Amino acid sequence: MPPESNAPNKRLLLLTSKLGYQARSFAEAAARLGITVVFGSDRCHQLDDPWKDAALPLHFERPEEAAAEIVRAAASQPIDAILALGDRPTIAAARAASALGIQYSPPEAVEASRSKLRQRTVLRAAGLPVPEFFSFTLREEPSNVLARERFPCVVKPLTLSASQDVIRANNAEEFTAAVARIRALLETPELQVTREPELHRLLAEDYIPGREVAVEGVLEEGHLRILAIFDKPDPLEGPYFEESIYVTPSRLHEAEQQAITACTRSCVAALELTHGPLHAEFRINASGPWVIEVQPRPIGGLCSRVLRFGPDKILLEDLLVRHVLGLEGRELKREETAAGVMMIPVPASGIFEGVEGSEEARAVPGIVEMEVTTRVHDYIAAWPEGASYLGFLFARTDTPQEAESALRAAHAKLRFDIGPRLPVGHPVTGRLPAGSPRE
Image 1 (cartoon, rainbow, N blue to C red):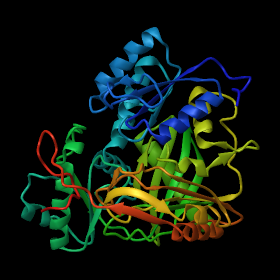
Image 2 (image 1 turned 60 degrees about the vertical axis):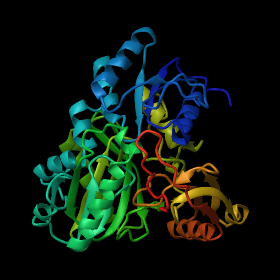
Image 3 (image 1 turned 135 degrees about the vertical axis):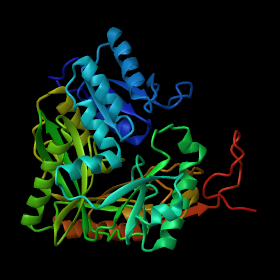
């Protein structure tokens, strides 16, 4: 498809830790608009790149250095806009945008959002509904930590995303086991190599009962536009919190949706976020909405495909590319059709060997797309250690209930072959990978 005739000669910097399907979707959206894409990534720049993108090698754990490198690169090849995909690149994106005079949320606001502890602290100081919480390090005496805890609670790392290593504990024994399990993951070479500054610190907070929802929005000069409110129809009561189904429009009462919208706006104001995509998550019960998190980045994975805008049904990626570059079409409204996405759950950790039932799943009425994103023979981890899904199912129907039913029916047709992972030690540390069978 040729680019749009009114597309300007612009350059977009996409910052991402994974040059996978989400990054490719944004690059394709930019290509449809005739926009040049430059990638910035913290993966090893010496690895072969499947898209020959000549990515700018960056260290997102050192955002000031990453921003300085972006500014140096922009001196010879100017950049018109920056989009960060995922949580990890957001601070570097904000610092680089500030230095280049590109519209973006202030670095201080993005930094406050990036850490679960700092975000909780800012929102509580603003009087917003967050659970009671405290933070502790993995070096503290467990007895001292337990003396401060009340149950049921949720314990989690400060910087990981996708509910990775988020665990509910109902008593002291479960709390101790949860901390040990989180410690084991945080000490793996795969996470230690990220050099995240808060890997040694955890957050403990009250468990909040209720239904869970997600909000997708976009900020322009401080004004928040809500693009969609998603219901998460699965109970998500723990002990782990692997998400699965998102459905929109929400089936919550209008008053509840208005309360969620108002709470989102208050969170944005408290964090002082001003520009760019926004993804927020809440629990709602008889007391109203409770904040789980608010992040200045788009929804992850391929979930964005569930949203379409305007008469031409452009995707969220297209809308956000137009938004960050100030192009026409960024104000288009979401279609009224009900839609849902299932992030296909991981039933067990192991080596993915294939899937059966794909054709039967695609034939379920209401299912419009299915994509398995895990490569055959790759290792896939189940929650709480996991952070990637087997793939995605998409439904479009007349009602949200029909979308949910179609997704569940399609998923029931699938049979995944996941074999055991061989216990091969890490070449440097000699440690076995998490989830390996022991001799």
